[in-house]
Length: 193
Image (cartoon, rainbow, N blue to C red; front, side, top):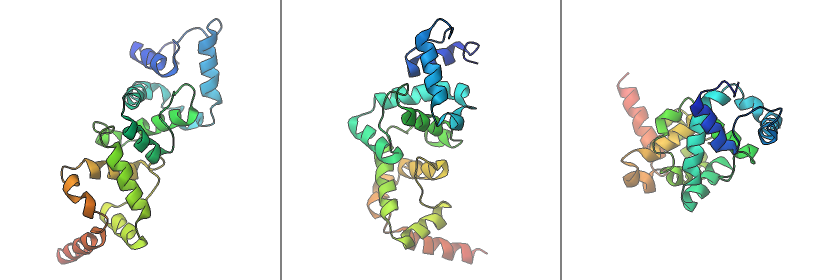
């Protein structure tokens, strides 16, 4: 699987795991990485997409390694893991593969690093919102409040919301306006039926 992979995938593997793809009979470091990945309890969750996602996972890891400390902190608040060495930290590796394996990834990938802090802030506000505000959010956006590490649709909505050009103007009143905005939407929807 790996030895026959494209050169770009082999480079991505080396950037992620710190070893070149080689012959597991003679390359002990490569063999160790293979066994480490295969023994990871999360391996079955990303095994099928491992090869196809090597390049984007490597790119995301490089971006996160170069992120500011506040952005890394926001990543931790959103995904529950620190930015780490993907070769050594199976949980971080799983999150990377979950993010890029998400069919919604393309919708918010371009501004992912830049929007980590506002997305983490919005997620916290939504997690702490009243049940009525959470209901209004669900009615407006078609998704309940979830853990962004586990739900790609919720993750997409919070990243698209904070990535909107109007976010800066609306962020301080966003939670407080969820219920009235939903009431207005319901009135408009009812009137147009």
